Length: 545
Image (cartoon, rainbow, N blue to C red; front, side, top):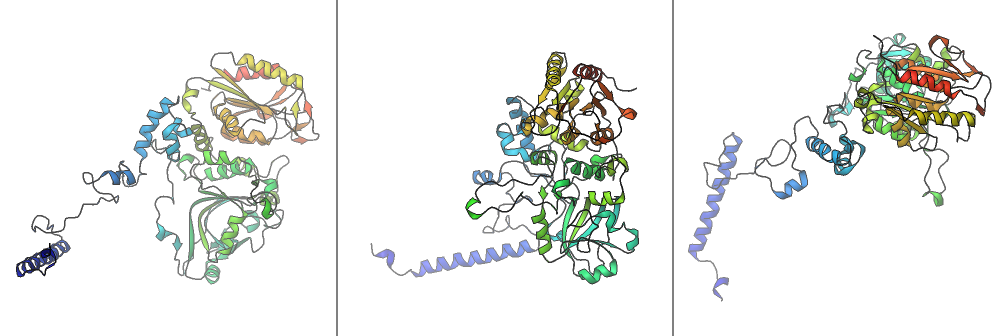
């Protein structure tokens, strides 16, 4: 028992020294050969032979074990592609069918929907990364411009609606930099004062600088960079509605009239004049109570479903962060909407201040199609139903609303009875959606719709998401002596037929009434049978030759 603690013998020391010497020689030889590009694994018996690592950071196939597969997954990683897309798409076909719809995973149903909803449309090639996303690295987040401050380029402009590339934001002020400042629109035509949107912008809101003046102000070192497309609205809470987003999208689409779907999607939506929440910050004892978010005229769900690439809306508090960071920030492309600037430039009677991109600038009728299709596909709707001849009529009822106009109760009931009879016709579906319906119920009905009808009001701007077919039509019911062209302006830009109703009379095209806002009616009359005859004519309408 005591022998194992005795000192090593000369034989044991010699053997140990020999082994260490051989290891040192073999290791150094292996390392030296590897440095000159020679694989020593077949030359030296004790050379190091590391497990090969692929370009994706994983062991190459054949060397992977269960733990690595558990951590990294078993899918293929291809350069320039998102990992796991193939598997998500395979799961979509399998699990989607078991949940009753081939695109169930897009709607968040089943295992694949719960795990891969963010992959919506990637496998089919419908969702592109766009310029400025996926092709940049952390080395591209700071611009070193030296003596060459980036020049601003004017892409599109009418008073109140402007597209600029390379806009510098510093200490809360937007700077337009040009070799010849007179070549740029005046700041009065671009934006408004943050303090009072009826007034022209102050120097702390917008400035146009020469390149030399910009270099003196910003210095030669550079600043941060915000890649991609920024939608920017200077309007305040009282003047921001769904028309704001529609105007921005329409304005942006004018950059490529023939193929607006080729444009990179917007990456952020900035509202410097709108706070994140309505009302003051609650007292500490009430901080756990949920706060009401400010309205931007579009439901948050619509924004996320229709613009999957959008980082989200940013508000006054987010803008203040840019003010406080202390360095200039270069925005790649800014699409600007400012109703105050549009008003100061002058408007025709009855033309709303958001309408200039529709009435002055040229764009294709499919300018909103990529956004509309994204929302339709979110609900699992596509062009197959329209191609199969299915026609859907949706009535957006306002009868139970606290404020706003509504139909006489008897006319409303007559319209509901007639719609119920219409629903029994072959190839026609009817939806009746009231003001208490959930967002999902309301928007799902609209994206299916061939015909939408309702009492007039801002809620009808959602009809921009209806289908575009030869039978498509929007019917808006007006009280006597009241009419505006808000919905007609949007529908006409999309090639969708617009029909206005007063009592038993309908108006289209050049026969539309003059703008008028004389009186407000709690309820008013409508000839339901006349409306139904026009619906029947519309659903059977044939495309023009």
